[in-house]
Image 1 (cartoon, rainbow, N blue to C red):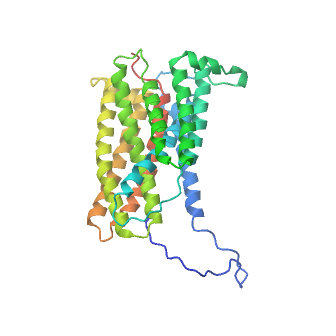
Image 2 (cartoon, rainbow, N blue to C red):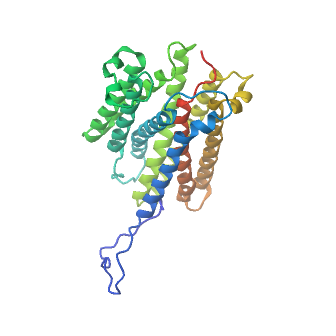
Image 3 (cartoon, rainbow, N blue to C red):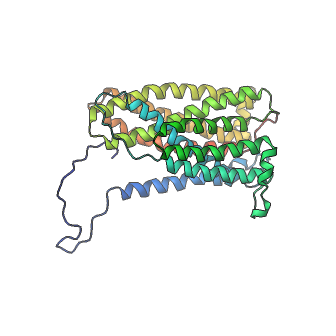
Length: 342
């Protein structure tokens, strides 16, 4: 369990027991296998989602939609992990009696994964948004000639710099390259030909920033509680995170609704939520976010009223899993055709 206290003893039985039994399985193996299974299932959403969402709508998907959706979901996940770490580390510094040590940072690994995903997306842009079949299809120099190409290169370089910052003595400097990724994504999602593109980019900027802090922050908070032995400090950290998360959820909801109404006018929303691929994926995301909000509320009630506040970790773990699915759906949304062409 994430939030249980672990008693450490200095003497342990020998792995090879006298009765001939083999070594006991490591306690973290089952959890690691479960995580890998969940990651694999989440990866199926962007890979198989386009065909399901487009079925019967009469819309045509761009080549390689499933792969692009998967790369975009991986990029979003790689953005959430270090952003959440920086966010919760800052919260932890204000917790009285908090242990100085925290869990091992996943930021360098996230930066490496994000770099690979951004590189894959840049290769697609270099071929005119077509899936490259060989290195000869790539036109790296052509990336400098288009707005999308420059933004793709910015994301590749930003993840590379973020990885170097994560390995340096000042890991907090990751905030600048991570911010560059968020800005690049906000600009990429709203081309200059779109009506009021600057407004759309601003909404996406706020939405993506808050979502990254919410999902990545909860993940790192649970990892931190697992390593802390001070239950009072753990409850205080969860309380701090819950208060900020409520504000983040409000901002995510407001910007998400506003962005959706820009894509789908209010008089056509109900029809497009079921009649277009984008609307169907958006409806699935809305339902899942509502479930996440319910889990967050359940965790907050336990945190305030339960005899042991750390029982809030159970719904919080389910919330993390649901947020991972939301990230996968977000990657799918970016690859589906927008209902209204500006």
